[in-house]
Image (cartoon, rainbow, N blue to C red; front, side, top):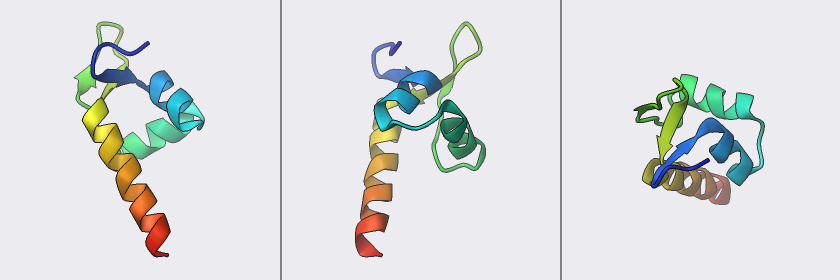
Length: 64
């Protein structure tokens, strides 16, 4: 579950309606930034970074 402005991979996947493996691949490929890990060593994504990621993908799709 989201912690303030930080989201787990599960939160991101649920919000974007993609598989968690897709989110992990975006992070691994450097397409989606992460800010660190929570106490359980789960990746955390900042809300602002996710919003920027979505905006860039939407703009890229609209220009193609």
